[in-house]
Image 1 (cartoon, rainbow, N blue to C red):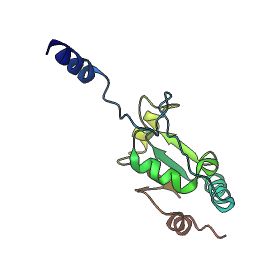
Image 2 (image 1 turned 90 degrees about the vertical axis):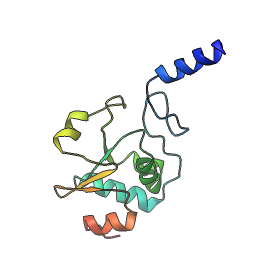
Image 3 (image 1 turned 120 degrees about the vertical axis):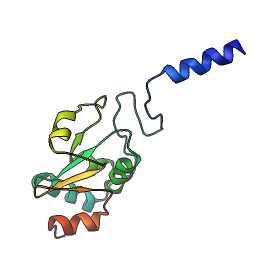
Image 4 (image 1 turned 180 degrees about the vertical axis):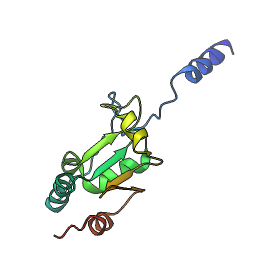
Length: 129
C-alpha cells in the first residue's frame, strides 16, 4: 500500500503535460502524414501571403489540422507555438494577438479559430490552384 501511495503521489506531482504519441521530448507537434504536391504548394502560398497558424504542441485539434497538410507541407507553414514550454515558444505574441483557442489562423489581419479543411483555407485566403 505504501508503494502504491508513493507511486500515486509521484505521478500527481509531475508536470501536467499531455502524454501522447504525437509529442517528442522537445514538446512540438510531430506530423506523420505524407503531403501531396498540392498541399506543399498551398502551404508555401500561405507562408508567402503572411498567413500564420497559432498552435500548441499539446493540442489534439492542432495536430489534426497539421495532419491535413502532411509533414512536408507543415514545415512550409508559418507556425507560432503558444505553449510556454513548447519548442521555440512565442507565448507573448499569442497573448498580444489575443489568441483564445487552438488552432487559430491569422488571415488578412483577422484571427479565425478552429480546424479548417484545406478547401476552407483556400476560400479564406483566395488561393487558386
